[in-house]
Amino acid sequence: MRIVIGNLPDDVSEEGIRDALSAFVPVDTIKLIKESGTPSAIIETAMARGQAEALARRIDGRIYQGRALRAFVTVMDWK
Image 1 (cartoon, rainbow, N blue to C red):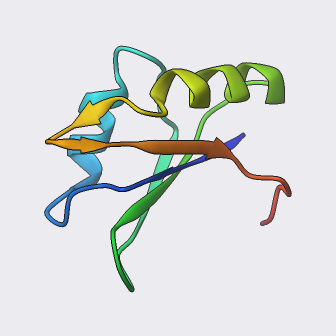
Image 2: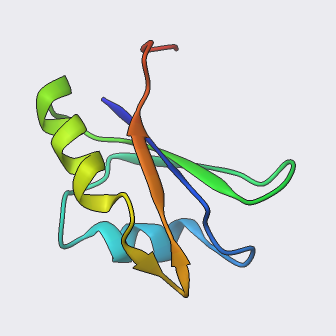
């Protein structure tokens, strides 16, 4: 399942995201998006939609390096 995490700091790294989320869930893959504006990340993890939505709610609003994170499960499961 894919979860999008937004409002990341400009100097964020894949390893930093993996470390920050290690208390919540093992992350299979991370894709950073730094093309325009505030960086975002798409994480993939092996869980059902309901579990992913619950995880996104736990992450949403948490402070990471001084920023309140935004997290949501994608509506469509694109390839």
